[in-house]
Image 1 (tube, rainbow, N blue to C red):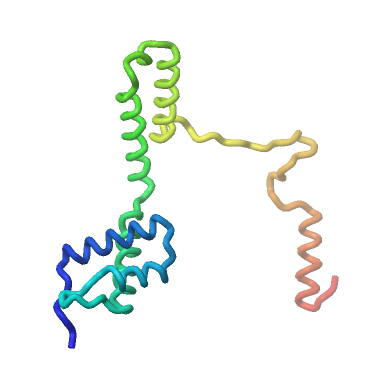
Image 2: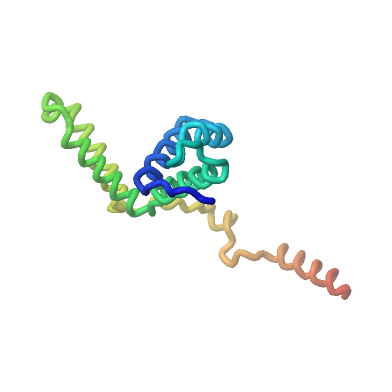
Length: 158
């Protein structure tokens, strides 16, 4: 017969503890053993293996939900972090050439993150007589080879 359930606060504390073990690199089977030894039911008996597995799954699931952020959030967080770096610069460096160089590097990084600079484009070109990339993309040698392969596949020879 099932006993009383742990409170939501107790479950959250257990999940937080398990996440700490995961961060420390403890293997899953050791986490399960530790859960069974450390976490007790309301009657004072240790929790079972199934409950330990459920807690471990909740820890991974909660961690996964916290880790999922889209690129815009990451970009916004990075820009805010860089602006905070400028604000936190020591007063002794703020007016110096070295400090201004650092501020300019940070501002340049912020501008890149905000996509103010156009994307760099590399175009590979050869001379007109011997181009690297053909304009039509399909030369006479390739056409002859394609015709031969089609003829071979269909069983008709030219």
